[in-house]
Length: 148
Image 1 (cartoon, rainbow, N blue to C red):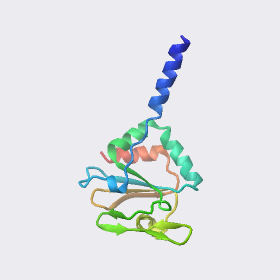
Image 2 (image 1 turned 60 degrees about the vertical axis):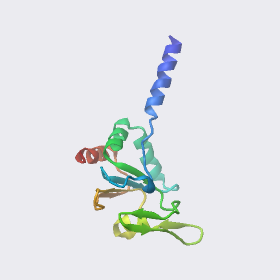
Image 3 (image 1 turned 30 degrees about the horizontal axis):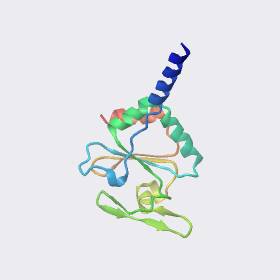
Image 4 (image 1 turned 45 degrees about the vertical axis):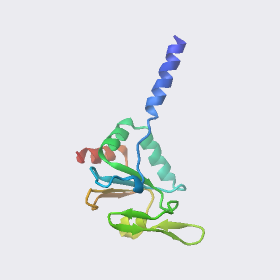
């Protein structure tokens, strides 16, 4: 009986740890079949860590995101490669020890990135939704539901 319980716990852990599929800007398909959801975060942002934890524990949300969007996790302070995105070419701007990516500035409201930020871009490159700060999972689920 203990062995069966142990096996069930292990299997449950495997299914609950299912990774949310995410893309890089360079791995997006040429022909977009669904919108792009960009999650901008940094390593030092404590709210970003809370957001990540909330998403990781919600299997329903991860499934909806996998089905309805191309999900990109974007750290504009670490991503130093050039990004081609909807006809534009964006580069990392260094200011010595740190820097920021031009794309983060471009897609942020008021051209000043806030972390975390969520930006949903439709297949034509237009911003459909933008939020700065923590977003609860219920709001993300509603948003994913409106994309069908």
